[in-house]
Amino acid sequence: MTDLNRRHLLAGAATFGAAAVTGFGPTAANASVPQAGTQAPGFYRYKVGSYECTSINDGARTFPMPDKFVVNAPKEEALAAGEAAYMPKGMVTVPFNPQLINTGSKLVLIDTGNGVANLEPSKGAVGRTLQNLQAAGVDPKSIDVVLLSHLHPDHTNGIRLADGALAFPNAEIMVPGKDWEFWTSEDNAAKAESNAMMKNYFANVKKTFAGLESKVTKYEWGKEVAPGITSIATPGHTPGHTSFAVASGDSKVLIQSDVTNIPEFFLRNPNWHVVFDTDAALAQETRHKFYDMAAAEKATVIGFHFTFPSVGHVEKDGAKYRLIPSAWNPTI
View 1 (cartoon, rainbow, N blue to C red):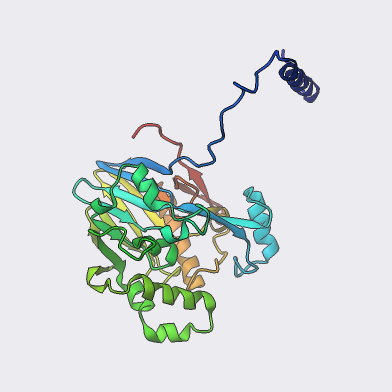
View 2: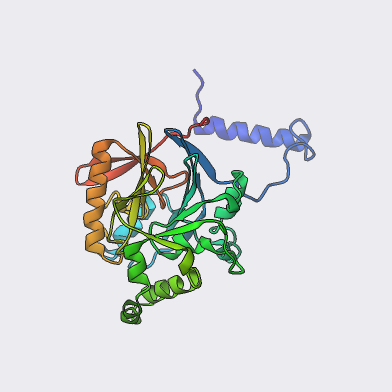
């Protein structure tokens, strides 16, 4: 039996190195090719009945963990959760994944990512939705509906190009009515003046949607907002935060939007409160209701902040939950 212990492996490496130096191994001319230095396109197709769906990667942002990224737990516990998930030490990584639903009659983009204005400043880490749509063979002009789950910047800013023009010029823009009412309220904006993050959110909504009021359609919960796509009330993250059931034939998936932020933290610890939640207690309650339902139904769940391609199942694990990523399917 072959003994692959450390001594044998090191000896083999030394032999290979000597052969390369003496000319008996690969030469400089054929040992390597220039490094690419770029990532592969980020899109992944999956079927829901007769619908063809595509997970579109907008990128992932890695940043030093703020002291209160998890509001109601010691930072040491949050750091330990990050290390347990093999995130860079002291850092947290948050992915972003809009979804494209081709119903056959409508092409619907659910959320738009951080926007191309963030592509260069982030050195390509985020703002990749348009280039990945292009790689998937999708012309932005062909998108019929931009369906927004809520009005946070990482979901809305892809509406515009870097010069302010519309990225999806022929699309109807649909927003949850409750979120629109909250974020466009001057009274609410005034109350948020002392909170820098919330102040920025209100300003961003005003800037992003300036002049677009006539293109915006406000939708309600519990309604079919596009063919086969039903809005689900999942408030807490924002007042009008919405998830979606996408159904065709006997197949259905749940697009959970931001019911949870990164699952390595907030599925494993569903009572943790992320700093971005408007009403953290309500978001916690929503999280349990949604995942109890998803687990009972054994539903496929798509998460905006799940690791790409963001498709999986949620199981109950005692008082917690865990994400079981779906196996990559090479066919559609």
